[in-house]
Length: 466
Ligand code: TYD
Ligand code: MG
Image (tube, rainbow, N blue to C red; front, side, top):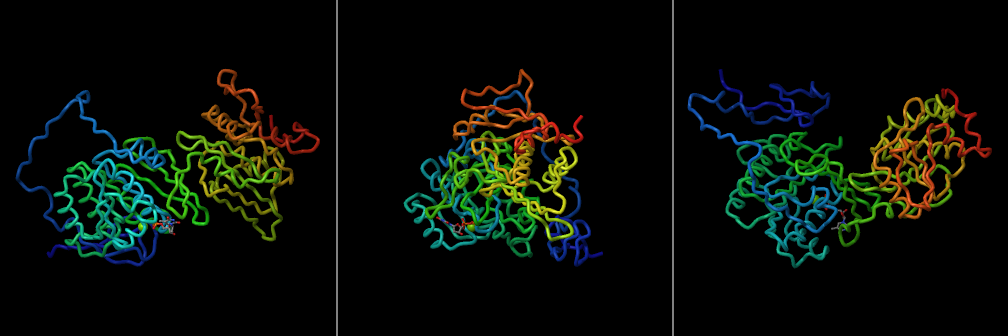
């Protein structure tokens, strides 16, 4: 029987089929099957020849620790876990036009002081990259620039180059291996190209930065395969309507994954934002109903953001619930708790929730701030503008303590807030706040409602509370 040398691989989930089909059986996506050369067109099994014996070592041995490369773009270094690890592979994903090329050009521009830097562009011409470098004020930096897409040429070049400390490949979807028939950007090409480049990076000890585009569904094109192959996955995200850009660690073998780096896209490239809270709150208007300030934590840093809610009568049979920057399931939960435990009804009303500034909040600690914004919007009664809110809400309406309260309160105080609505604390765990910061403990969601009712009666509202 003739050996099959190609198969049809779903570009969304990576499942292979022997036959083409319009829809992938595994993930249900349409038109994602692409014919690709098969890995099993090579002879099956290992054959008879013996391999070498592997030497085992103990965990307690000493390993040479190579210093990390610090780019001095602090926001970038922090997300990488304190600089680039030599020999590691980092994938930087993000929507087209979000600023990945700009960020990496700036990073290599800064790194060129301390190590050899190579920037390979498969998307832009040399002139375009040069023009951008000049605009970023990096025109005189020693960065080796090339416009190339053939992985074989790249590997040969990189093997010979002994000075390279950092290599940027922009983007992995434009690279191709000439032994494969499929087009650049397909799963097989992306996977093989990345594999080969990562191998040479490990061998030669340079840090490899791969740019990856993100598909409509929000994952890096060429499914998750790339994420498994690299040491670190960073996403560069942000709303194109806003100038903020957030670099978020998704996976990191050499550092924490919950760090974010905040940048601002300006005419002269990306500027680091050292105090994100001040930036996110810059456009805040005091005394507006439906707006609260959430004291959150992103990675190791406190970040204050404004949460905005709008409750409006609905003309639809099923009212709308629209969320930007937060989990919609979490909003439904908070709405349900407000209705069932506190007697606040949102029936027949559209509810809109927005995290101002384009940040995505994923902490449950934002629950209380969301609830406060919703009640404030519902009652058309503004929160005191000098207050911050945080706390997780349970299904019975209880407000639960959250981590790092000290840090949150300190940041709020630094930015001029003088009141905080927090969960109730055990005496031992009570956060220490300096004088000048008034901390109000909210044990049950019902207590919060009292805040907004003119008469200040909270106990009567506590429907369903035991
Ligand atoms: P780019 O880095 O090309 O995005 P990506 O590589 O992720 O596709 O960024 C392009 C966008 O950034 C483009 O819309 C213009 C904007 N930009 C600025 O606003 N200021 C600048 O200094 C630069 C270089 C780009
Ligand atoms: Mg680009």
